[in-house]
Amino acid sequence: MLDKLIQENTPFIDVRSPKEFDHGSMPTSVNIPILNDDEREIIGKKFKQDGSEAAQKAGYRLVSGALKDERVIKWKKFIDKNPNAWIYCARGGLRSRIAQIWLKEIGVNVDRVELGFKSLRNFCMQIIDDIKKDKKDWIILAGRTGSNKTKLINILNNSIDLEGLANHRGSAFGDKSTPQPTPINFENMLSVKYFQHNNKKLILEDESRTIGRLVIPDLFHYKMRQSNICILEAPLVERVENIYNDYIANLSFSDNQAALNMKKFQNNLIKISKRLGSDNFKKIDKLMKRAFIDAKKETHLQWIEELLSCYYDRMYDYQLDRKMNRCSYKGDWKACLDFLET
Image 1 (cartoon, helix red, strand yellow):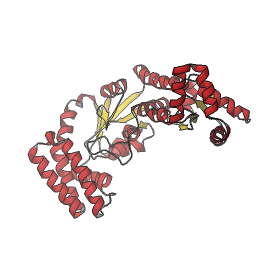
Image 2: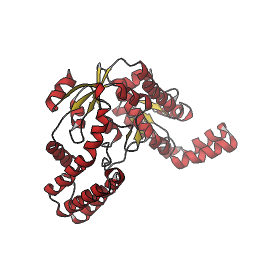
Image 3: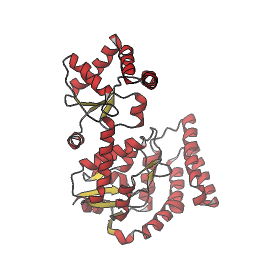
């Protein structure tokens, strides 16, 4: 049954507390808790002191009357919009059963995940484990920084965008304005995407083990390292332009915001300063400062080109040498697109 629920992107009502939900949930779930964080803490203490029956009675007293009605109506509204919705709590126990009963009292029937989020989480982990038996043709899209690999990944209908799931561009400068998902949410999203992938060929972007602060599951990344690669080639001038468009073009250059942006980019540069070397770091840092002060595209292009030439291209060439025995194709954007689509 869980395979059908995940394959069909079933919407879920997660009745756990917000803290539990924030720690990890299913991609298609919405959090409408039966107990908020404070209420759950109260009932938890009651359970430890006086046992299950006393905790249940305390819970019924705590969530009753208008408060109960308010929560039941929220569940009903979601189910009205999503008639195929299911409900779950942590382990399929008391909270989801009570929610199911309360909904039935107002004439609403909803299915419940018997073993709750724990069973859904275990199913997602089993999907990753089953990669060991995978028969798909995995192809890893490689290429120098700025060659627009992620854009190509998102054009293809037989790909999974790992950076999109991780909400990070994958480099030292890859942070976005919104936070990355929790490790559990990242793994769950990846599992669901992989489970729903029904093409015989799977295209993934070449990634290190980590994307920002998130770690690609061991078995998944091991399979990536064993797979053939397709190398997307693009000239330096084109890659510099792509980097500018992706990272700089849409920034605000008001006085206050420009200073904040410059500080953020300088902090990112510091992260790789040891690998850059003192001279290169000072040169790029100087160009970067001038670019954010001048707010001129041409100045930004200078530090971007220096960073690609002095750091990213050298690092890529070193890593590529170790992967060339797995290279099955290389070409420009159009050639790689044609190759990966077929």
